[in-house]
Amino acid sequence: MTAVAAGALPDRGGSLVSDIGAVFMREMWLVLRDPFSLIFSLVQPLVFLALFGPLLGGSVSPAALGGQSPLQWFLPGVIVMICLFGTGASGSNLLFEISLGSYERVLASPLRRPAILVGRALKELAPLVVQAALIVVVSIPFGFRLYPLPVLAGLLLLGVFGVGLGAFSYALAIASRKREWMFWAVQQSLLFPLLILSGMMLPLENGPRWMQVLGAFNPLTYIVNAERALFSGSFTDPAIGWAVLAAILTCAAGLWVGVKQVRRSTS
Image (cartoon, rainbow, N blue to C red; front, side):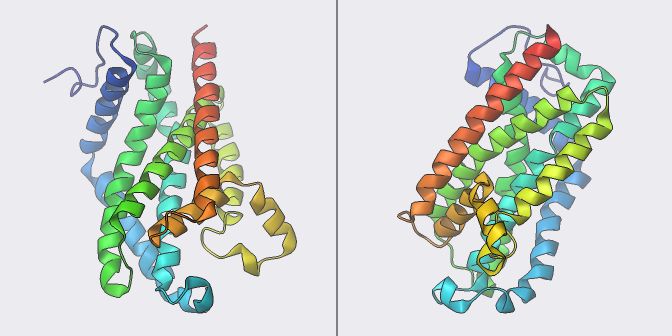
C-alpha cells in the first residue's frame, strides 16, 4: 500500500503544487473508501431537482428566461447549493480528525499550511464536478441546453469560490475544536441566510426591498447570477465580472484566515 493510500503524507516538503496534490490524494482516498456516501452525494441533487423542478413554472417569469427552459435558471442554483453545503460543512471532517489525533500528524509534516487548506477544499469540490455533469446530462432531455465552454468556466469560478469557503470552514473548525457545538451553531446561522439572500432557489426580485438590499451585500448573489449567465451560454454578462471579483476576494480572505488559524493552533 502506498503512503497516500495508507493515509500518510510525504515525509519531505516539495513545491506548493505537489503539497496540494499530496493532501488532495490523501483526502480523496478516504472518500473512495466509503462508496456509500459517494453514491448518496450523487443521488441527492437528482432527488432535489426532481422535487423542485415541477414548481419552477409558476415561480420564474418566462420573460425573465428569454424563452429558455426553467431548468436553465434553476439548475445553476442547485450546483451552487451543492458547493455551498459541501465546502461549508467541510470543517466537520476536520473536527473528526482532530478528535482522533490524526490532524496533529498532518501538522507535524513539512507540508505548507496553504496546501493543507487548498487540498482539503479541492477534495470537497471534486465530487461537485461529477454531480454537475450528472444532473446536466439528466436535464438535457427535459429542455436544458448545454453550452460546454461557459459551463466549464462556471465550474472553475465556483472552484475558486469554494476553496475560500472551505478555508473559512476549516478555520471555524479549528477555532471551535474544544466546543464542537459552536461550529454547527455558527455554520447553520450563516449558511441558510446566505442561501436565501442569494436568490439561489427563488428570485429576489419577487421579495421585499430589504431582502434585495441585503442580497446586494451577499457575495454568493454574484456567484449565482454569474453561474446562470454562464449556463445560459453568455460570456458577456456584467454579473460575471462581479462574480470573478467576489470569488477571488473570498478565496484570498478564506486562505488568509485559514492559514492564520492553523499557525495559531500550532504556536
